[in-house]
Image (cartoon, rainbow, N blue to C red):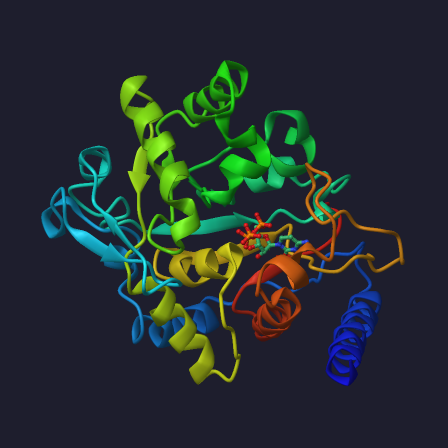
Length: 319
Ligand code: CTP
């Protein structure tokens, strides 16, 4: 109980510190600072020591064959066989081979995006990364529409598509996948055994309906590499969130990185409640109970990079 109290205290101490700084920034919630390309560059250099982002972004066809056995990263005792469908969908070359972008947006899923009016700004970036198939159409004014890469944790199939229990849900997922229209669909298939069937369902749907997406399945080393980089920087992250994985990968391809929808706190800077996700009713405690993410700690690290000018965090309205 004492430990829980301490954790709660630390989280809230964190929020007030962050809010104080945002309050002092003079902006309407946007922490103002330009992205300094020198800082971005040195940051990238450091990250590249741990990570070969071009490779680690996806396992390639040449490295696996159907029937190969893979141990799940978080459930080392459990294994999966590489199915024919998964094999078919592995890319032959890295989906981001030789790619470089001027500016990239990484869009997290915090409710802080609601009423932000950031849609246009987000869509103006050369490369836009989104997380967990978050809906865009109904929220375009605040989150934009452009999607170059979107992640999909297998748990999304359960949470947002009712585990495809009937034809209606299958159709909903299919429509969402069709709407991706050639972008990269990034599926962490080798993380936890719980995702096994869900990944197979999605793979099957994509193949059966000839969905126009470029599938990518992060390498087995990615998580360790990302964790290793942050640990070296004294950020002790057990299980990096999708948002942090995306940021770390993006440093390889993007000169300047802008983050939106990163706000893992229940209140905004004006003490108004903030939804955990902008699009669903998932509640706040979800992170601490069901998953070992340490979002506030990650946020602190990202905020510190923002202050150094290595990235730009927008946590309120866009101009
Ligand atoms: N995020 C945030 N604040 C929130 C919600 C999300 O900063 N209130 C960021 C996190 O970096 C997160 C990303 O947005 O990784 C995408 O959100 P979500 O889909 O909830 O992320 P996951 O990390 O994939 O969560 P889970 O493992 O629970 O699926």
